[in-house]
Length: 128
Image (tube, rainbow, N blue to C red; front, side, top):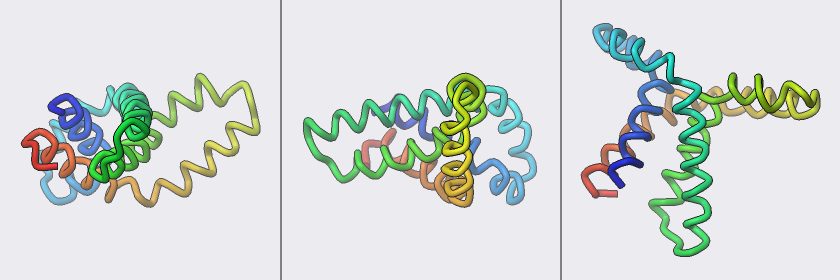
């Protein structure tokens, strides 16, 4: 649970970075330290959401369903550049579908990032 919370908070901070910096300009320094790891954190969130999806088949939990969905959205958005470079580059159809999905999800990046920060904090304190 602790690791899920930490990963979620880091991903949420990067996803909501534009909003956070607009509200608190001194947070830019911290976020700038995280940005180089954006793709890696995104991939980690994607794998973590897949692991949680598998766990949902063993025992259903509404809390796990919510955090899994938000982790997948944020993970995909943060990891898109890596996915595009290594997976989608060899298949034009996959690349196009990936771009379409990213365009649809991009409008939710900041709200999903804020939600993931909150869900991660709740996970750490075992409230969710």
